[in-house]
Image 1: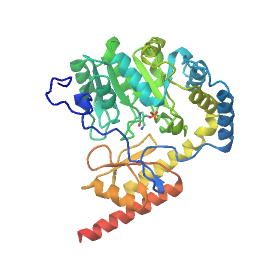
Image 2: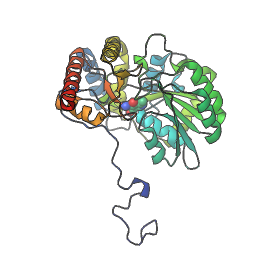
Image 3: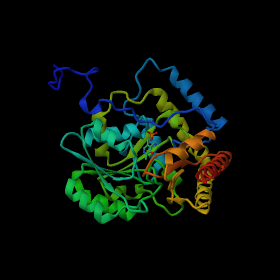
Image 4: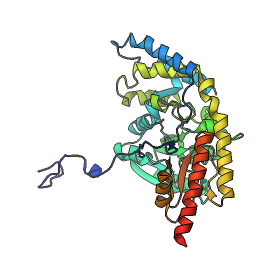
Length: 372
Ligand code: PMP
């Protein structure tokens, strides 16, 4: 008998709800133009590489010891970078904001509790919920991908989420949340839950779009998550973090694995933060490239979501998979994600964007030719 009482148990004896599932992740293909996972296309400068190397090399001499479990130097450096009165006790960090959010769900979700978001949204959220046995409820977004506050309030009242997850800018649409919406969500959720504003792409937001960090002093149920994977050009380092009420951070320390962030990761991140200005140096160029891309796609007649991020959602295609494949055949990898008919393209270097525009033009004319 298997653990579920079935006469012929399946192998391996995995949890029934995981049977047959594929792991999350976009294809990692060796093609010339990679525009599918919203990385920063610019590698760290030679100075930053040298500084990180020095820091790692110093830390290597201490690798017989476990790392600093409380992440002291790192949390202080992150608090300093965030500003807005954030203190080291109000910062938490882990292996990518993916793990930060898993910690949130482990500590604040769980059996009998609800996590809520609004689709289309980041496709990892339901996986954190599944993995922590948290019920997953998803509301809808408006036609322009903004949030309808009345709908959001109704859903909050109905399902009383212990964690409400909203990216701002949203992935895959690029839509940022106005602060009045974040405030209204904090008020609606109240002290029985957390409002997690996932600001993975915050550094790319357009002038005049504020960060939810501004609201932290007034709302103890607000959590703002960030990452070094995007604007900071350090996706390979795996460093995500959050700012919140120190009481929230203390609760996260209960669920983390001991020594979850290696000495090497901490050394890389602290060295990188000393050079934040250098690492973020291409952000303005990427924002300008994004705005140019939005303009070009619109001029070509595509539907395009307004974007405060380093990617653009565009459509609508009767067969998006065929367009995705056509672009891949031209050496350009984008992401078939979000609502049916739409594709998401990350913002790359000017050369990469020129290659994308050429490929899309080529795919479109080949498709028109085939339709004749
Ligand atoms: N949040 C959002 C909205 C994302 O798009 C991503 C990465 N695609 C993440 C969080 C996780 O990023 P990381 O784990 O690299 O910090």
